[in-house]
Length: 410
Image (tube, rainbow, N blue to C red; front, top):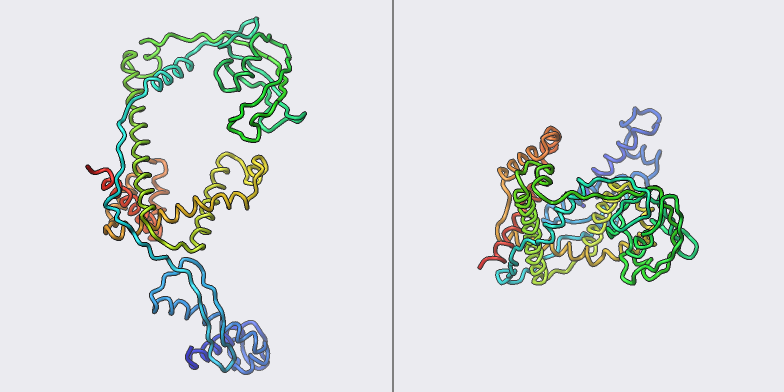
């Protein structure tokens, strides 16, 4: 800093400090610098001046050097004294340079869209089940019956998480429970209690239970015979505005095909982005990875909150720690950061930028999609920074679409 600039900072800081101290003979904020220094001490005045000067001249230096940091700076004060101008060094992390490969050669295979007859049959079966009749019976449980039970499952004598429930409904043979569990219910009667053991499969989806033996105690409260209606025109008419079974099947096939097409489109875009990442050279600063992990953690907390689960409960149930989880996220976070940088570089090279008209159209689409929330949407995007954020998001989507079109072009 120039000597005059530093002395101006000293004077301003002394004046600011004098507002909160009593300097005999002077009104607040009107005492001379030397009197303030004698009252509050040289160290406090210099410290206040340094903080003010760093905040001001750091921003000036960024503008002069045309530097855009992605994280707060590391400040080192090299010289500081009441009479000696402040000298400080700011070390900043900037967005890394991205070297894109020849993305023109990215190619993604297009898989044919095929409707799965079993999927259609499965939907029809669900519709059939929704219209089933449940008739109470006084007999033993048979495969296909509905039953209401209490069960308590223990491993090594202790009830395991999710292993117990009261008045639990199920249809025997539906496959919701383990096959051996449902098979053990066959033959039981209302009011009967039974204890049996079974072994979880080696490839069970909850690894902590895989290949372990559990003891279950089950009590049956109710048994109902499930009477399924026929899958015919009458069932179709009861299911909605369909004139016959053929119309219902056509509707199911339409939605099924749309779902498959979306999955295939998502797969193609993901494959194109993966290839782009493979062609990209960039040295990632750890700051970017740490920021991405923080964003992932925030999303994770929000997802658990929607399920009414706290992070602490999740970590306890999964025998996990926050440190282990963050470590597992290191590689996914790195890939996400590279993908973002690569797509941004691709967007700039292809001169892709959403317009204000694009932003207005998207806001109109959101209002039409959520009519009950249109006033909140209007208010939200009345702020420039929210419009800017939306424009950035749309620009990114446009870049992905352009990359996809290039990758799938014949």
